Image 1 (cartoon, rainbow, N blue to C red):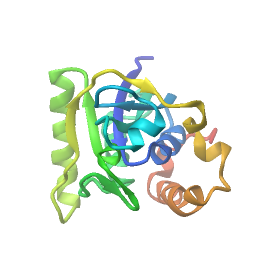
Image 2 (cartoon, one colour; image 1 turned 120 degrees about the vertical axis):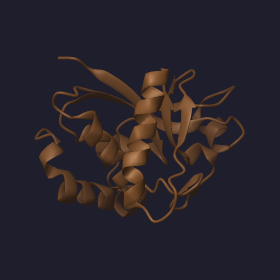
Image 3 (tube, rainbow, N blue to C red; image 1 turned 135 degrees about the horizontal axis):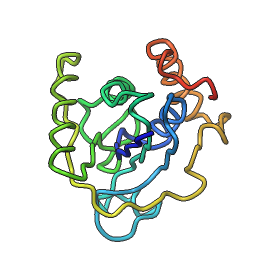
Image 4 (cartoon, rainbow, N blue to C red; image 1 turned 90 degrees about the horizontal axis):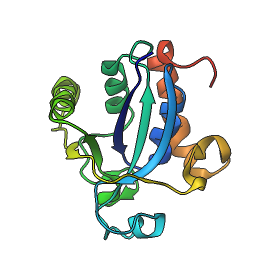
Length: 177
């Protein structure tokens, strides 16, 4: 098994965390902060002053979940045409972003954007950023949806995304979640 790791931002990390955990071939999901400077804890990042984004580090087996499918799911489960905002979550910490570790990965991400663009009426504004220091989010943010399904955000924002995932991507979902 050859695993790969990508770090993606799609608004609040609770959404992408929940989606990634349901995908076949995913072995690890971690909500993180990256892309900024200075302190990286929830209160500082939410202040919008650190430049960090809420992101998700996804480790997966591309033999079980093709990278192209992962990127298609990423683009179809958030609005990559909305600058620094996903729904009511507003600020640079909620930007759509792909954090690359090499020039080859940057080119791969750009190709994924180019492939996704025809499916949207507006330009994709997903940023391509070098992966800097990664800070693990606090324990309460890890696998939030599973632990706190009664929270309104989970019911009104994440649940519809999971329903759409089941409807459009069922063949790529793990039988274990």
